[in-house]
Each structure stands twice: as C-alpha cells, then as structure tokens.
Length: 274
Image 1 (cartoon, rainbow, N blue to C red):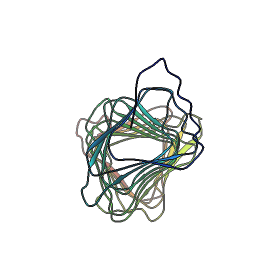
Image 2 (image 1 turned 135 degrees about the vertical axis):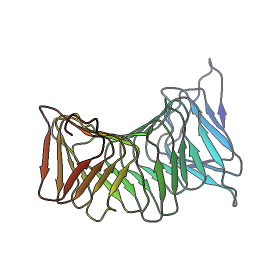
Image 3 (image 1 turned 180 degrees about the vertical axis):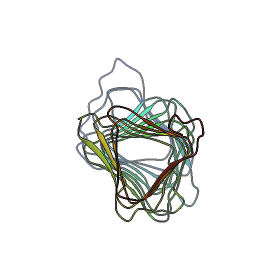
C-alpha cells in the first residue's frame, strides 16, 4: 500500500472496516484512517513507514501460511490505537515507535538500535509462545508490563525499560525472564511500581536499577537480582525478600529503604559502603 506524492487532495471516507495488506506499507501523505483496523497479513518480509501527522489506526501484524516473516519499522511510526503482533517478528528501527494503546505480542519483538524508542501508553504484554530479543534501545511503558507463562523474554543490559505511571506494575510469570536496565521514573511526585503477587522470584535485571525521587518500587513477594548498581533516590520496599546487587547501592538524601527482614547485599568491593 503506497500513498505517494504531494499536490493532490486525498478524499477519504474511512469510518471503519478492515484494510488488509500483503506487503509494504508506505504512507507519504497525511490521511485519517478513522476507526479502521489495518492488518498486515503477508508471506513476505515487509516494512512500515508513515509521515508525521498520519498515525496508523489499530494495527495487526499477522502472517500468511506458516512462514514467520519480519516486519521492519522505518523512521518514526505512530499507531493511534492498539498494536498487535499476532505472528511473525516486528523489528524496531532506529527511530521512535509510539503506540497510543496496548501493545500485545503473540509473535516476536526485536531491537538492536541504541537510538530506538518504543513508547506504549497502555499495557505491554507478552503472551504464551511469544519472544523478545531486545539488545538495545529504550522502552517507555505507562501502565503494566506483563510476561505471561510460556513466553521467552530477554532484555540485554543496554536495553532500558522506563516505567512511568502513578500506578504501574510488573507481572512476570515466565521463568527465565530477564530485563535490562530499569528506571522507576514517574513524574507526578507520588508514582509507584509494584511487582504483582505471584510473579517469579527473583526479578532479574541485567543492568542497573534507578528509582527516581518521588517514586516507590514495591517488591511485594519477589526477590531482586541486579547485575549493575542500584541508584535509590526514591523508596524501595523489600519486605522480607532478598536483594542482591553485583555492583553496589548509591543512596542520596531522598533515599528510603524499607525492610521487614530478608537480606540486602552487594558484592562490589569499591562500594563507598563496604
């Protein structure tokens, strides 16, 4: 589907329905898709591009027959509603992907660009059978980050997850899940990130953990393993769980560490608190 050129008016009367595309989607014109659903149902590898001011509607990435295709995002791409990776692989590009709704992943998500930015205003959910190989880039999640049992999710140390909500949550139900660097980074002044009861323990971070001032990270009943350092400018509630830090903790005047038992240990001998 290619909408090219300038200088000609595009008169559209799209109020709903489903638009199915078999290969690339290249939108160089401003267009209002209304309440349509766009489905990329392809046997081929494909790319998705759209100019600024022309966000895609609810969007589904699917596959034709049994081939698991790769769909690449080109430049900055905005989805006005939900984005679903039903099958195949979505590869994030070097630009910004904004999902103004939920991101539901049944297939695969991949990223290897340091400049890549994924913004999700709703929930980000990996369903059973899905996978993620996130080597780099930033993910901003405004609500819940969920990894269901049966998913295979791995974020490298260079891949950063920002949880930015007054009431965000981590619900990690798949054994072996590893996140990269984690920022608890709401901006309202009274923000919190809670590990949902029943999540696997410990939560494994391949990078650093930073809890910004005005934020609370509540471990509930999960332990925590940090491969990097802990920078605590807000509040960390560990309850009676075990927190292990390969690096060391960095405290400030606004740090609050609340323990009701358990273990809090770090292993870096250069720590100022050793």
